[in-house]
Length: 216
Image 1 (cartoon, one colour):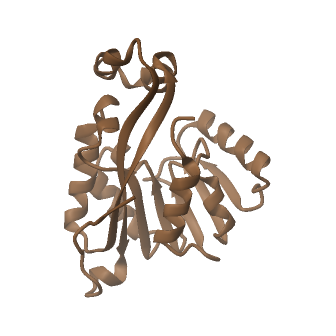
Image 2 (cartoon, helix red, strand yellow):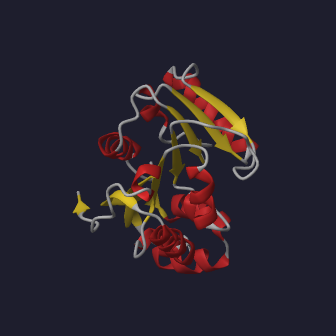
């Protein structure tokens, strides 16, 4: 198991009140965090990867959560969806224009929750995503963020082969960076990530962005 998804779900639920709300989950394919859906009213699980949505359906069936989620294959910038909250599930850094994505999300729901890797994360560096991650969090500077929290965790791999399988789609830079683990076993890679809440009422004069504070 690469990381403790149960811990991520617990942190997500502690950060934001999903109870009875309709949520647009952007990047939900794969279904690693589906357990948060037990608290939600309903989740519109959006992804542009059909194979990832198939994995999501498998996880939903195994978890008994099929009635809580509606998997949707589509482009975030084209779908006509509305809800009470939009969740970027480790997906904002993958958007070609993260600022435009947050702006779009605020037109779909009054609350936007960003759950993503943070700048300075060793894991993001090894995955060759450090520039995209930095750009995604920098894009939030143009929005009044009501609340923000930073966390530390680890990615765990039995050996180099398992790590390689995880990042092989990231390209040559990532493969070069993980070469130092070629003979390693029980690999633990620090992963810094965070949660941020953007609200339309904050934009209109509500709570302003506090300093981020680390939490275990």
